[in-house]
Length: 206
View: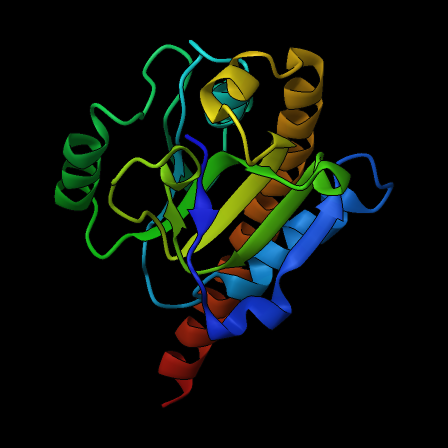
């Protein structure tokens, strides 16, 4: 939904990498793991924002669909091609998520526009995304963490630019983001299991 991440002092720790970099999957995964809360029993929610009515804006729902098809051990996914999270239903979807999940830790995923030289960049960072900011829409910020992908150039006729973004690029970026999230889900699952084991052992020895 053409997001802009809000400023956060932790931005210096952001991951910002081209989708076709050979290390992109590992760096996306590491960026996610560095920001996730461990041993706090908070459900991890991935909110993939966007719509398939615009190729440039389909990054989020493509990620959501690929994740849903692959299956995740611990992360919950909202926003797919079949059931998208977009400007019209964003408030209702977020209210539903917060009602269904106690103290959710939310990862907001969205497409955005940027400089020509940065097209294809994927960013993982602390703090929320601001959906619609790239096309002058006022929507609530989403997420404790954000993952954004620059799908095209900003500055002029943003709606037209998004409509004419190459689906090939968006698909490739989505697949890299999905691979990074799946790796992070596996690492998170193992770390949480080890923390629980340590907690159980400590209780038995007290």
